[in-house]
Length: 115
Image 1 (tube, rainbow, N blue to C red):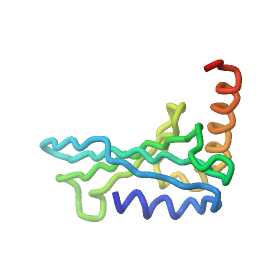
Image 2 (image 1 turned 60 degrees about the horizontal axis):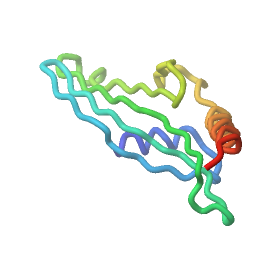
Image 3 (image 1 turned 45 degrees about the horizontal axis):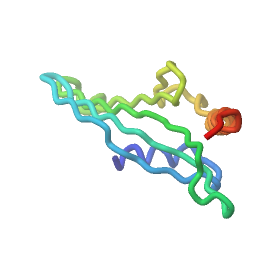
């Protein structure tokens, strides 16, 4: 989980975002161990300290048992509602507006729903 937290720091998100990281699964196989995490991000405010809308990013850390030490760890992530799997080596790919768009769409849907 520490690796995911360190990676999030590289995104340089604005201070409005708070997040919670949860480990979802561990899969230990013959040649690799895979860890899956969900990072839920939200924008709490004074008027709504518990936001109704959140954005999730799913991380997969793969530790290869058969690769050289400098190639053992592979990190990928996927933003909620998107099938694109992104590698950190894809420079300049992550954009904070993706999260803003997710939150905005969820808020629009909730306004249309009657509870």
